[in-house]
Length: 156
Image (cartoon, rainbow, N blue to C red):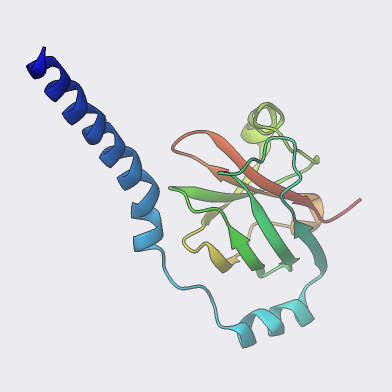
């Protein structure tokens, strides 16, 4: 009986360690966000401004974003923060989405802009072949777990 309890306790600790590692690794390896002056300059040059908030249907206490989002033909930036997590990707879609199911339905037509490598502020370049005026919503998506993080509609 003692050996069974010992094995169970060690397995429980192992699982907790792996889960904690999956959560903390992105936080520990996150790159610093852009400078405040760079974000302010992009805000002045942006064609669109919108906001991420925690009130999306599929956002929860582990998957959320909040802050001001600025979109131009050259960059998409966030002056705010995202819940830490692995493998965040930024997409543009042509319809407003706020659930995993809605995004997965549009993902084949979505435009992938790149990896989000910071949880406090980010600035991603828009590829030259992307016309941000053809889309209306920016989405942060966790590719590893196919998890919706947040979205914001910038054109109505």
